[in-house]
Length: 196
Image (cartoon, rainbow, N blue to C red; front, side):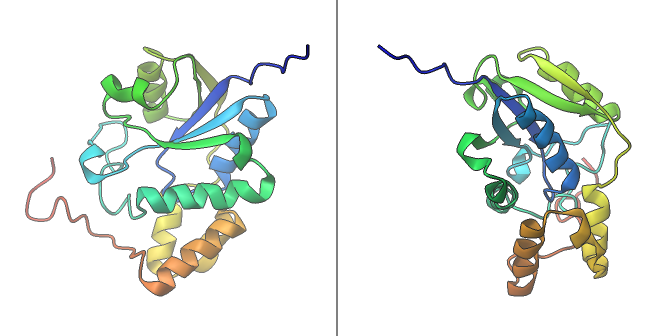
C-alpha cells in the first residue's frame, strides 16, 4: 500500500493588492520557497469592510481602493499563473477589520507571513497572532508602493507599469482603456460626510 505525503501546510499573504505589484510578488516568492501551499487573502473587499485605522489613515478611502475584489483576484491570478503557482494557491477575501470572522476564511493553523515595515504591519502581526501563527519577514526598504503606482496612474505617468508584473500591467491597461477601471483622487465616501 502506498501513501501520499500529507499536503504541505498553508501559508497566507494578506493585503489589499491595490494593485498587485513586484513587492507583493517577492513576498509570495519567499512563501513558495518554503514549500507551503499559498493563500492570498485580499482585504477591503467591499466599502463596508474599509475601516479607518490610525497606523495607515489612507487605507479606507476610495482613492486608495480603486480596484474591485474581482479585479484584484484577476491581477493575482495573472501574476501567478505564468509562474506555475496557481495549482497550489487559493485566493480568498479576508475581513481583516473583523477578527470574529477570520476562521471562516482562513483554516486554523495557517501561518500568516507579514513583511514588517511599519506601524500598520506591526499592528497587523499583533492582531493576527491572537488566532494564527505569524511569521515576520524582515522588511527591506519599500521599493514599490501601491500609493505611488496609483498616483502615477492618475497622472498618466506610465512608469507605473515597471513596478507591476507584465501580465498585471496588461490587464490594468485594458481596464483603463475600456472604462472598467477609473482612477480618481476623490474619496466618494467622505465627500459631504466629513472624515469618519
